[in-house]
Amino acid sequence: MATLTVTPDQDAIVGEVQIGAPPERVFQALTDPRQLLKWWGQAGLYRCTDWQTDIRLGGKWKSVGKSDAGVEFTVEGEYLELDPPRALAYTWRSSWAQFRESRVRWELLPHASGTLARIRHSGLGSDPEALKSYSGGWPRVVAWMKAFVETGETVETRQPVSAA
Image (tube, rainbow, N blue to C red; front, top):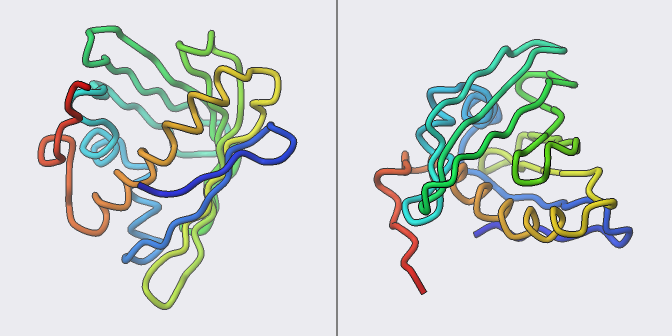
């Protein structure tokens, strides 16, 4: 699992991970709806069932899914920054946080072993529950993306989360 931290002002979750693939490949995994459906989720937690993207500044994106307990969710937003394959930023509104808006930004830097991916999810200072939820979720999501890009691991091939 990737390590991410909460900023001192409690407004953002930040982190970075090295990925053994070029920035172009990582950017594809973050923007192609067919690929997003393959890696974003895990048996025993939740699964995305639909992902739509309109990759352009101002374009909309939307993910729909279902938790392992059968609870449906939606996450959606708008693209704010597109600089393939170096940067991607978008608004983030989730059904479980009453669609309050925050922002996610990925920075993809070429590195000797592939890509240094930096993520920042900001605008969470007014919602301590969302901050707590996302600080536990983003490390898992980043690890899923890394495993998909490096080894082809998918929701179907990933080990399920066992009930505690």
